Amino acid sequence: MRIKFAPPRLPRTGTLVLFVGDGRKLTPQGMQLDRRSGKALTRALNASRFRGRAEETLAVLAPAKLGVARVLLVGSGKADAGDRGLWQRCGGAIVAALTTSGESEAAVLIEAGERSAEIAAHVAYGARLRSYRFDKYRTKEKPEQKPSLKSVSLLVADVAAARRRYAPLDKIADGVFFTRDLVSEPANVVYPESLAERAKALTDLGVEVEILDEKKMATLGMNALLGVGQGSARPPRLLIMQWHGADDKKQPPVAFVGKGITFDTGGISIKPSAGMEDMKWDMGGAGAVIGLMKALAGRKAKVNAVGIGALAENMPSGTAQRPGDIVKSLSGQTIEVLNTDAEGRLVLADALWYCQDRFKPRAMVDLATLTGAIIIALGHEHAGLYSNDEKLAEQLIAAGKATGETLWRMPLGDTYNKLMDSDAADVKNISGGRDAGSVTAACFLERFVNKVPWAHLDIAGTAWTTKDKPVVPKGATGFGVRLLNRFVRDNYETPAAK
Image (cartoon, rainbow, N blue to C red; front, side):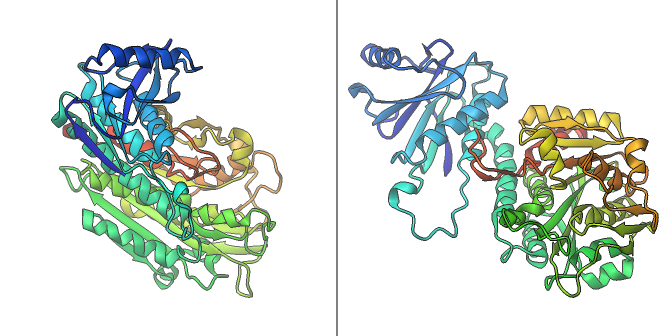
């Protein structure tokens, strides 16, 4: 879908979009509709249950003098010009209402004012985020099932300012879409080797991409990661991406590490068959890191950043890792593998240690669809946040609130940590009970971060959605890209970037 910006002139074709405030307050955004058209729209409002609540929509036939086919009224609630999230959700509501309406064009009138360019940019951003569709394998859709909306125009007084504000948002959306594409692909298309190869596309943006194969990882001693992948015909990979955007290229980076299990059967500790097809998205953490690096490079972020993906396929076979096996990780710590379905923490153990040891980052954040326990605790509304650093945790929570990708702080502590002690090795990969499963998984990871300020985001409940949301259609969400982009922008970029 194409996003355009134009001066505030009434369109003669397509759909005209007007915002309506709480209490049915019709505001014709920067120009006065003719009196007869205004009265007709007011009558339509009064004849409906539409109240102007945020994101509420009402489509009506356009009064004859307007020329357009229809008018879409979109509720802006008790609008605050500075509430970027509200305007993004309104943009998403516009696309949701018109995608399969048969309409190909929409023009959104933005009310004149000091922040009109910013409002236009964020309405456009929300519209673009909501327009995502993964349909490359659909070959027999009926015409009425296919999206008809081809373009959304933002009609705003200062077109140049709106375009400037939208430009970096457009690059963030590129990163979100890249993540959604990767997570949506089936496991016969995206596996460790092919996922790493797809990340090479980032070199066009100036990202340095390095891929470690199984031989190199074996030489380094990454036996925890290798153990997870040894049952698969698809060998594991470690994906390393570097963006040097800061003025000082030698400044220590901020680092992001993603779990990239391209398909998770559970291994020898095999999962139940029901729902196993969803395990193609068990690489959502690595997918988000790749999309984040695309977003940072695309908007030329003034920061040095490292992204690492720990990529493996967890399969049962005659060569697969067994419950009871003991492996020596890259850190030198030995791990007793009691359950091969607790594999994400194993690949992250080596990736986290490698990251902190090689890059000496200022801070390190990992993302992983790590535990079903976090879904039991938080559902699908928040990702779980664990951290060894109060300031880092506060920064991430603030970024989550600002972007709508919200986090909920969860505990760490010695009492939980002791549950991961093994009788046969330095640590075991499960606690042995069902209690605090997400917490003990985080405690396991903490043993491999050394003293680096670190946060773990358990995104098992947020990487995929079964229902449409304001700026996220059903399917892969791209959760983490917008959140971490904002986190970087607010806390690590040089002032010139802000």
